[in-house]
Length: 119
Image (cartoon, rainbow, N blue to C red; front, side, top):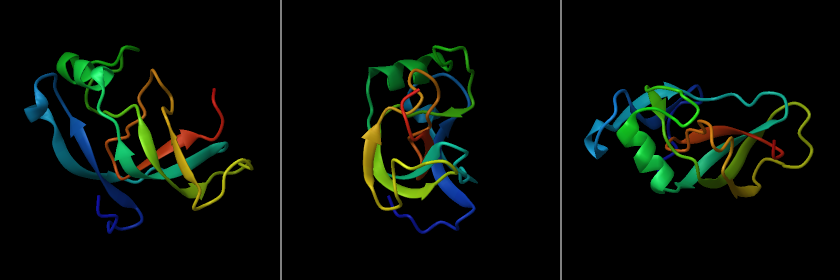
């Protein structure tokens, strides 16, 4: 993914309705800001697994969150920014994981905010 968007926006793959892969669309959206205890990850890879395609087909997350949303449970990338109180990570650290699983993480995007510690 090309990371040349402006600092306040990013590209993400979203969906507004349930359905086949054709419901996915590339949009420009606000770039997340890491909150207290969170890191901002510049996404270098996002996994596509059964939870993703099943959620896309249903149009609803397992926790009941309806579309529109950005899929992506698995993410690998580099810490772009750290939020207040974060001591475990520094900008530039390589990271991977499933932030917020089984809830919305939004890894099909250029950036994702994630908890710095498992919750």
